[in-house]
Length: 562
Image 1 (tube, one colour):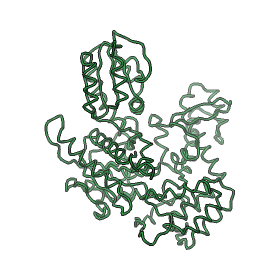
Image 2 (spheres, rainbow, N blue to C red):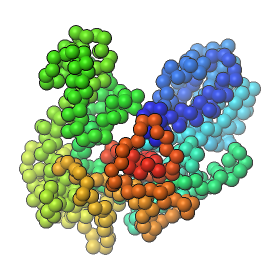
Image 3 (tube, rainbow, N blue to C red):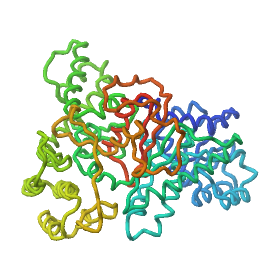
Image 4 (cartoon, rainbow, N blue to C red):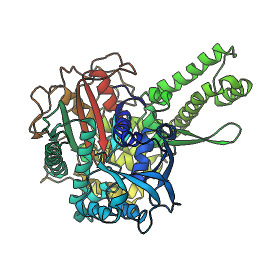
C-alpha cells in the first residue's frame, strides 16, 4: 500500500466513517450538524477535510462540550467516545428541551449498558440511530497509528501508578481490537518474552481474548476465522537506544531539532513574516522526502527548484531562501508551485544549521556507543574513552544525558559508584531520575549479578550501504524482517494465539534485498504485520515499517503506540 493521503490507515478510516455514519445520513437529503468530542475531532481531522464533510451535506461541525444555540429544524450527528462525560453532554442537549430535531449517535467503541440505558431513559424519542463503529485509535500516517493516550506511559511504568496499570492495559486492548476490526483482520497474537517485565504478555492475553469475543459477536452472525495477519506486542525497553540517538533522516531530525508543534512548522520568511506549514501526508513532497537522509534531502530540494526555475528561464545559480523569494515575487504564476519547495528548503536549512553547530560532533560518539564499533568496524573496547570528549565539551545538559544513557546501555548497566560520578559530571544531581527511571522500563541501569540481561543478537548488515553517522538500525527492523521471513524464535516470541499455518509473510523475501519502490497507487493484497510498542515508537522505527513494506512486496507492516 503506497504511502499517501489516499492510501493506508487514513484512507481506510475515512472509508469506514463514510460507509457507516455518512451512508446513514445520505438516506435523508437535509443538511446536518456534526457534533464531536476532542478525540473524534482529532480522528476526523486526521483523515478528512471540511470540504469532504460539506460534500456529504454536513454544514456545521460543533464541539460537544461547548454551549451551542438550538437549531430545531436540523438533525444532529453525534460521533463520540462512550464515556460518562460524553453521554451526560449528549443528554443535556435533549433534556429538558431538545436542541435539534433528531439525533444520529455513533460511538467509537462499545458503550457500557448503564450509559446506554441513561440515553434511552431521557432521549429515546429523539434518537434515530445508535451504533458502535469500533474505531478508537488514531491513524497518524499511512502505516502508523496511535491510541492517543499519552498518560498510558506513566500509568504503566510509574511505580506510583500501579493501581491504574490494569485499567490502562484493558483500554489499550480495546483500542487494538478496534484497529484490527477496522482493518478487517483477526491476527495471531505474539509478544516479546521478558523475564523482568510482564506488560507485553498481559496485553497480548487481553487483546487475544477480546478479539475472540469481538469476532464471535460479528454483525454477520458468522464466526470469523483467523486472517493472514500477525500482531506483535513489545515493550519500549526492548530497544532503549533508538529513542536516544540523534537520527539524521529528514522527519526524525526535524522533529528532534526543530520546534514543530502538532505537526506544524513555524518559520520566518525573508520579509520577516511568520509562516506556518503543516507536515502531513497531504504534502506529497514531505511524503517523498521524510525518510531520506538529510544529505540527500539537502541535495534534492535545490535540484528540484533549479529544474522549475530552468523551465521558467530563471538564471542558474546557488539556490537559497532569499533568491528563491526574489524569483517568487517576479513570477506570481508559479508561486504556488514553489511554496512547498520553499518550506522544505527552509526546514532542511534549519536542520543543517543545528547539525553543523553541535549534532555532527555528537553523532560519531553516539553511533560508536550504540553500534559497539567504529566506522572501520573496530570494536569499542573502552566506551568511557568515547563518552569523555562529549562530557568535556560544552554540549547542552540534555545532549550529555543522551550520551551517558548510550554509554550505560552499551555496558548493559554500570556500577552505583560510576553512575554517581557521571551524574555529578553532567550536573544533574536533582534530575537523577532522567537516568534511573529507565529501570522501570526493564532496562538495566545499575549492574546486578542477580539479573542476567543479554543483548538481542543483531542481523548482519555489514554489506548494506550506510552513512558513517547513521550506522545504527532500530532493533524492531530486525524483528519485522524476521517476522515476514517466519524466523522469529518461539521461545523469545511466544504465540498467545496461532495465526494460520500459511503465514510466512506470504512468500516473503529478505527485506534487505533491494527492490524497486512500490508505485504510489499500488494496492497490496498480501498479509499484514501489526506491531504495537508499549511505551512509544520513534521516527526511525516508523521509517522501518515503510522500508520493510517496500522491500517485501507481499506484506504490509503497520506500527503503533499507546
